[in-house]
Amino acid sequence: MVTMKKLILGLTGAAMVFGFALTAQAIDNPEHYSLFGDAAYITPGNASDRAVHIESDATGVNGYGGISYGVEDGTTFADLTTLSSDFRIEADDTCVGGSPRVSIGIDTTGDGVRDGSIFAYFGTDSGGVACTPGTWQSTGDFLETGRLLDTSQLGGTFYDTYADALADYGAFEVTSISIVTDSSWAAADSEHAADIDNTLINATLFTYEVPPPPVATTKDQCKKGGWEAFGFKNQGQCVASIVSQSENH
Image 1 (cartoon, one colour):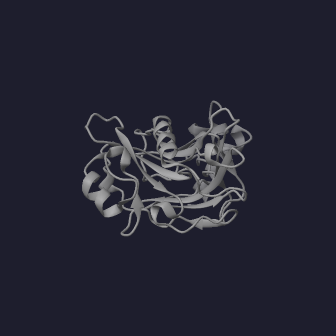
Image 2 (cartoon, rainbow, N blue to C red; image 1 turned 135 degrees about the vertical axis):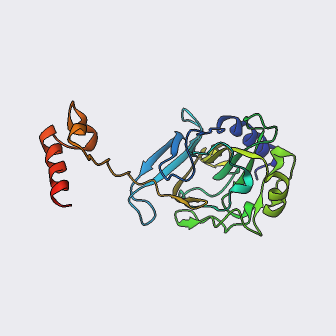
Image 3 (spheres, rainbow, N blue to C red; image 1 turned 180 degrees about the horizontal axis):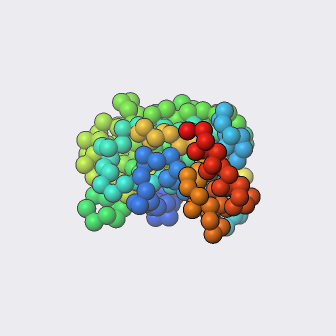
């Protein structure tokens, strides 16, 4: 059995690492996210072409893996109204040691620096369905009545209701949002992994698909090697696409 003391120590140390804040980006753009640690794209996803595999391996270089999402300056905890994700725990793992989880960095002092995090755990610890290894599942919406959040880093409790968390911390600014696993220490084989897909933050769905290539709209964009950025084999092919666009409009 994993002790609560060890879990809290693990989460505290991990939060120092996972406080990424993509403040130049925004959660309303599905391309504004980044992978960190032991995380990589996999094919296929959950009824999609691509998902993200996150892993915590005690023998690896990092010992953790995750996805960090862009957060606009000024976003408060109350501004987050929907938060869910599809996930698939590796067949020989389960939800354990606080992983996987969503980590929401919170600035309580107004200096733009994370003072602690609110954690939403995949599985039953945050009031969700039990994790079924090897099967795609949904976390359900963490930010709704009946769900539980860990606000202990901010002076709250391990099992705080969403309503109480919203009342106590809703006005504070969010510095970061990430999904992470770092619980290799709690896994029998010293390795913990999960696949992540279709993450919904407010109205933005992160599908992790390959973004479509940009489209050239002027002949000048094709010059001086510019054709390469649009996926063409040469400048002539790029220019021909511009001509074709003009003829069809």
